[in-house]
Image (cartoon, rainbow, N blue to C red; front, side, top):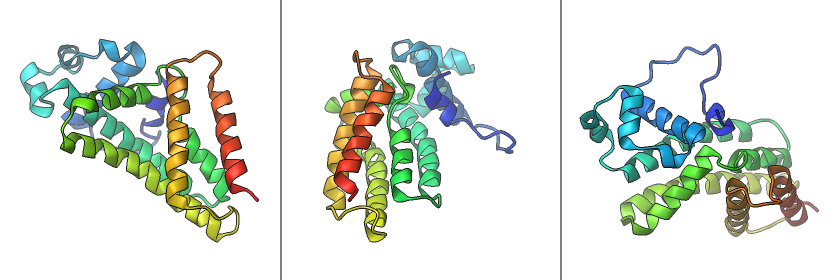
Length: 208
């Protein structure tokens, strides 16, 4: 299974409540994307995979667009917990910035979470404002954490002074562009290369 799905898996040794039907559906959807690709994810196939009738499936998700968005939200909730734990560590701000970038970027071509992001972005062109607002909130969670880390690094003297909100916006645009190149498998754009570009960007802009 792809690394993004492993990141969202429960830690060993923990007692967890049994997964609810909706959670089982979302986990199964992300697993299908990871193992077989987004094009193999269908409402009927998902129902068969979890032993649920089409009627029950439609109770949770009226359309495939809604299934994809809820799967993305579910994935981001779990990734957000990892991000917050990484940022809460007692470590230099620059080191925690690398940890945020590591979680942000795809693991490689066909990364399931980023494959899902691309599809949701594409479908949002025809979506209503309520759907786009839900998607925007997922992006703003990353933005707020990045801004807070930049402010912390500036306050401690580790980072030079920048407009944290504007810098975070430009940096996320850079990360998104490189992430798309990586997830679609653009020749010559592997993860090590992408991480090198990102490190150069932050070192040049933030370090004295």
